[in-house]
Image 1: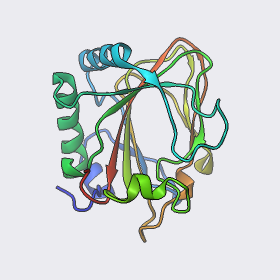
Image 2: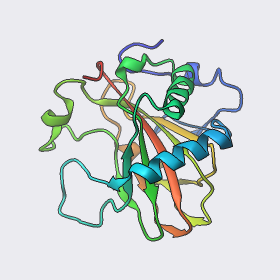
Image 3: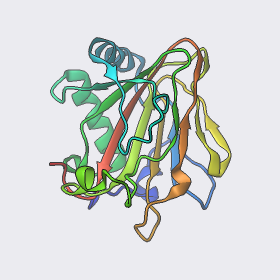
Image 4: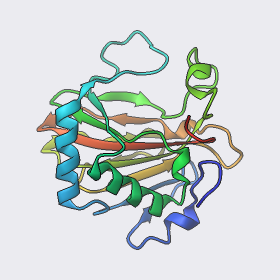
Length: 210
């Protein structure tokens, strides 16, 4: 297991099929068919049953900044236990550093405008969210379904859009090699144009999750 909520390129690249985006600006990887169709379906069912309006830290006054719905997944649900085991094996990060698994649902027209997953060190809610477990280190995100149109994840700094594909994992390091947060991880959950989009997200922290 890794230390202090950290994975590594070396650990991730041990997995057959994983691809690293060739850029010095950000550590980002993708792995197709990471999650089976059956597990995707079971996770989607839980998200549908327990979703609520999504929120953001450091409210910027834009009520349309994040228009998706969110589901806080119960850690003891069998599908969640399976998913957590897959992530722990891939990342090498001690599960104690992980936030609870979260699901998101996007309907037509819904999006999450360009944002970072780390908490802005000068943000008004930084102490509220980081005083116990520290900053976010890695993000692991899984697309749970194919989307009919739209719904890609755009990283402007590397000029790349990742298309939603059922079972595909996308993961990135939210920090630079010196430990500072990396603004090149700014990404946009683009509007769904047709159909629905389901995503699963796992964030890791510098210290154990309290």
